[in-house]
Amino acid sequence: MTVQIDIDDKQWAEARTLAEELKIDYNKVLIKAFRSILRNLRREKLKTMNIAEKEEQHRGSYEKHPVGPDEFYVDEERLIEAWKEL
Image (cartoon, rainbow, N blue to C red):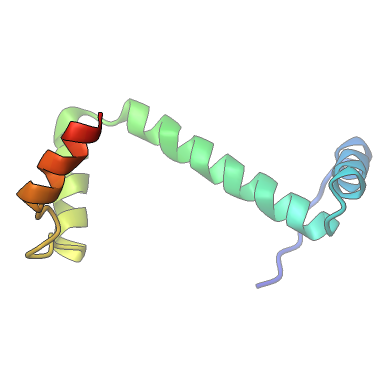
């Protein structure tokens, strides 16, 4: 998807400079910056959610991606051997 946004000259110059320093395409710099912004916004959203909202979000996640039958299986013999090595 292509999106058009307005960036001031100083920010654009900084993005291009970073791209040159990192030796990557400046579009990738902008994509990384956008992903970082979204990650930070998600964190901010989580901070403002109350417990009921967080529980609902978790419930919905487990409905979309239920726990598999062997997801938490632990081979006890391997676990004992691993603990012996510590």
